[in-house]
Image 1 (cartoon, one colour):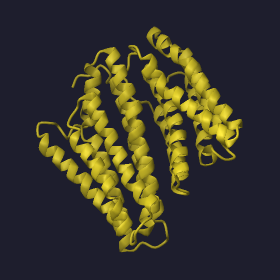
Image 2 (cartoon, rainbow, N blue to C red; image 1 turned 120 degrees about the vertical axis):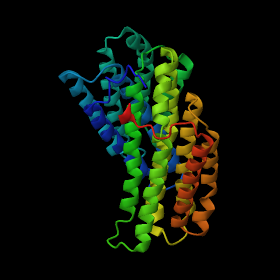
Image 3 (spheres, rainbow, N blue to C red; image 1 turned 135 degrees about the vertical axis):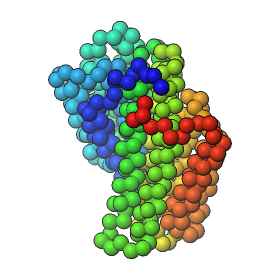
Image 4 (tube, helix red, strand yellow; image 1 turned 90 degrees about the vertical axis):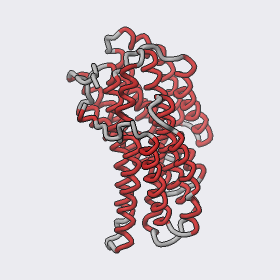
Length: 377
């Protein structure tokens, strides 16, 4: 496929930035896994929703302007400091570390604004100039929440979440000149790193000093589940999404990038967080039934991930979505398997469900290239 974006690929400094950002995902997983409750789940959703929006601001920034030059990279590293401080504070963000979270969030927001002000393209400056007041308002709300009492902190951070995630639908996005190849690759690499978190969750959950047959089977099935989830996106959807962006008008390209990789990936990455939390809790008890939170996390994480990819297909028009929505529904139905048999049985069932869905998709779409790889383009 000819692609005018081939000369613009993700730089190593962007990849390093993403490695720092993924630490926030690890911390959100810890927040959910160690003390599950409806309150903790809501806290995780609120924190990750605000952090994910801010990550998106940096992804759009480096898509518009290549991170070259000493000053730009130093400022980008300062933004990483903000994310790292946020990540460290996440497990206690609603307790004693709310202020640290707010300070990290403010640093990252200010750096992003400064970097956008240094950009030259008129369209980028004009478009994101409209959003600067909203971003500043959200950062102020997050920072103020760090000083506030528990109830008020909730209110302020919910307000920040709403400011972030309603500004684009309300005020729109113009032709900001999204570079499709770079944008898809950046989010694909982030997804790949994040999927690695589920593999780490499998390994860390079984780190008990003794590896018997049960532990090894659990590890292999956990890896198989992560591999099947990888397959759903990287077996061609990434290449097809890039092709759609390449062929779209500038305005449509911006809208697809926003809703597909902004809103859609909020569900995809959130699913990985929940799944990782579930695997951490489930696999150490592979030979016995698990509690409702654990079974729900494992099933719900897979369901959210697959549903997010199905929505991406709908938005981009890149393939059937019905099979994936069906996988998501069936994944939820596996909760009783974990409750009544064992965590290992539930993970095994999910592997069968996802792999079966992959095979059905391949059968229903025989003309679709399921072997496209980015390295071949």
